[in-house]
Length: 401
Image (cartoon, rainbow, N blue to C red; front, side, top):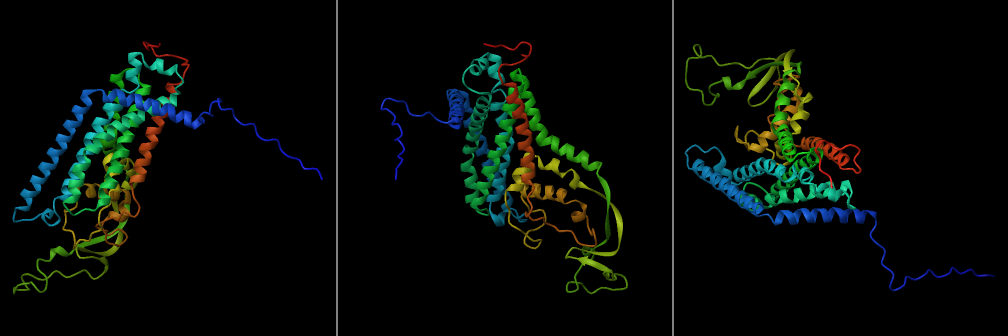
C-alpha cells in the first residue's frame, strides 16, 4: 500500500514582510487617517474651545433659570404640579430642547464647509490624487464633523444628570435622550458634508445646509399644515353629551326648586361614555380632516423624533391633571394624534369615546428617523459621485492642483 504524503508548506523566511491588511482594513485605515487629520486641525483652533465654553455657560444659564422658575411656581398657593414631582422633568426637558435647538445650529457650522472649503482653497485636489478614495474622503469628513458636534453634547451631560438627580425621572431617560440627540446631530452633519461635496463655494454650501435644517424644523410643520388643509373627508360619528353641564352632583346638590332648576337628564340612547362625556344617537357623517395621510411629514421633524423616542409613564386622567404633561410628551401626543386620524381622535367616531392618551405601542420616531436617514444617504451619494476622479467636467472657476 502506497502512502502519499503532501509536501510541507513553504515557511516564510524571517526577513519576509508580514501580509498586509485586507481590503476592508485598508479602507478603514484611510478613513481613520482622514478623521485624525480633521480632528487635529480643529483641536489646534482656539475658537473651538471658546465655543465649548460659551456652550457650557449657556446651558448653565438655562438650567439656573429653569430652577428659579420652578422655585417661584412651587411657592404659589396654586400648585401647577411641578411642586409634586420636583424640578427634575422641567430641567431635563429644558436642557434637551436647548441642546437640540442649538445643536441644529452648531452642527452645520462644522460640516457645511468641510469639503467646499478645501475645494475653494485648492487642497481638495491634492487629497484626490492620493490613494484616498472618494468614499474615504467623504466618510472621514462626516465622522470628524460628527465627533466635534458630539463634544457639545458631552458638555451638556452633567446638566442632564442634574435634572435626573432631582427626581421624577429614571436613568433610562438620559440614555435615550443622548442617543436620539446624537443621531439627530449625525443626520445634520451628514447633510452638511453631502451638500458641501456638491457645492463649489463654502458660503453657498453653508446657506443651503441651514436652509435644509430649517426645512426639517419649520418646513415640515408648514407642509403638514398645508397638507392637512386639503385632506378633508368625513367620519361617521354620533352626538356628544358633556356631563360637565351638570353644576352639582347628586350628593353636593343644594336644596333648590327643581321646577326652576330642573336636573339635566342623560340621553336614553347612549352608545359609549366616560367620566367627561357620553356618545348617543344615530351615527351620522361628520366633516373631518384626515391627518394620517400627511403625518409622515410631521414625523420628519427632529423635535418630533426626539420627543417620541423618549419614554414617559402611562397616566390616567385621575392621576395626571389636565395640561400637566411635559413639553416633549405634548409633542409626542400631538404627533400620535395626527397619525391616528379622525377614526381614533374625532369625538364619538363610530359611537365610541376618544382616548385621552395614546400609548407608545407603535412608535412614530422610526418612520421620521428613517426618512431623515434616507434623505441624508441620498445627498451623500450625490456628494460621493461629485468627488470621483478623473472628473469629466469641472465647474467654472474650480481650482485644481
